[in-house]
Image 1: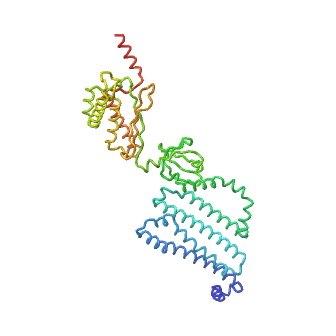
Image 2 (image 1 turned 120 degrees about the vertical axis):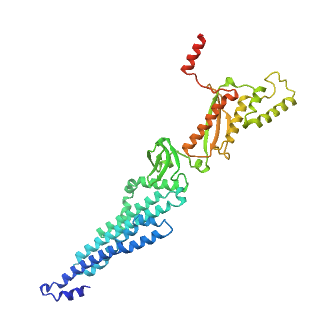
Image 3 (image 1 turned 180 degrees about the horizontal axis):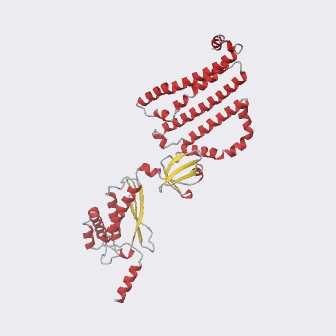
Length: 418
């Protein structure tokens, strides 16, 4: 190319003797022009065709390569490579300037390649999130580590080119700074180790509901990073927790509840113990009209009668033999009610039990699971169930215990004064 330019310059008498120097400058300018033309042609035609073909495919995952700008960044590599490879020939008469231009072009190539790989890592991470396994195993910490290594190697390469030293020597020299690097990168290293344990043991995943009272955390995991875990609390605040804290400290993960499809109800009703008594015949007849326990009343009544007749029990004294109680009938009614409730998970435990009596009465605990884990619907289901239980208590000639209020005491005083 140089000889061709010189042959044309020889015909111009005014530049006689400077043909070679001027030819080198013209050749370099020509290389620059070609580089820009190729860049714009690649970006305007080739990349547009590639983008069109990708968008037309049925698979939408490859669209991420476009949105992340992987192909757009590739267009900057071609002109820089042209300048890098053709400059030595064009600027052979100016070796110092040629070396500077080549060095700048090489540095630019390293930076562009680094940015391309950075975009490719982001694209692959985004594609990974489209798979179901991403909900169980987060690779955010691995992505962040890959980027750290990428930029670390890029810096090493840039410094080695500027100092004209082998990258291996620079990396070997860093061995003496290992202690300093360990201190500087302590959190990323510990976070990465914690991230590996969290992922390999499937302790947490994005979307899991966790509780960590120590850090004020009660919400869903948004992202598991290299050094921090981001959690969106139910009050819509966002808390960041050190990744290693999930290994070092205790936390509660509600994923098991979400996977089983049942959310636990564990709440008690306090019954006034003064209202607990043996059922009379009139009460049993009344209870037998209750749909959920009519069969239970009939079966239990036959069982008790048969037992007492077999042992010839003297029924004149209430302490003798077996008798049905209103509290026992009430417990069986609640269990039957829960079993027939459309929002209770019948494949999980349904239990109604007495707890230890307290100064506030006898606790009757409901232990069951709703078949809907949504927080709002769960609270609504639980409230509806206890609305019914509290309303039905008087039907069994029982009362709920409640500490007397000022109005209750005032009414008692007024009644006593009358």
